[in-house]
Amino acid sequence: MNLYTCDHCKYTFRYPLKTLACPDCGKEAVRPATEKETADYYAMQRILQEEIRLGLYAAG
Image 1 (cartoon, rainbow, N blue to C red):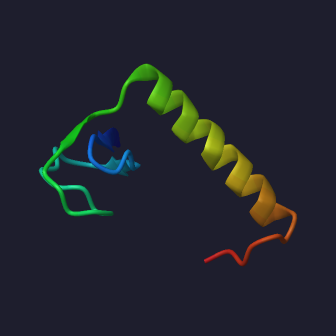
Image 2: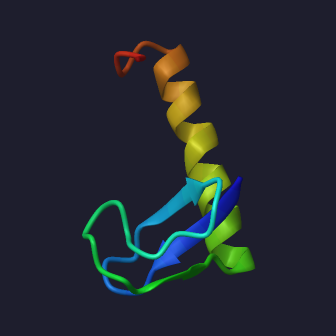
């Protein structure tokens, strides 16, 4: 999966193909995520998975 970031709303997301629009705001300001954005994305995913494991959020 490729990671992309929207320059308009700063949303970083995974998408299997090249995308033209942001799934969050709908703007066509999407570009490949930088190394820092990629690292931040995966760090946040680890935090969220741990919070789900601890029962802080409902999974699914």
